[in-house]
Length: 59
Image (tube, rainbow, N blue to C red; front, side, top):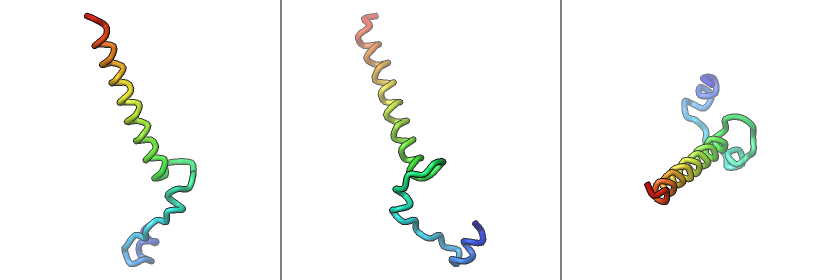
């Protein structure tokens, strides 16, 4: 990686949209975006269920 930065003069090259949107295995930028989105949906759904159970449990 250090060699790549030396070749480009210390500036990282921008990543093309084809590479960002490509379905690849492993920890890719797209996988991290989807992981974050699904985690927030799961967290929100879980908190909503807990809230609804407490509201309608009648305790």
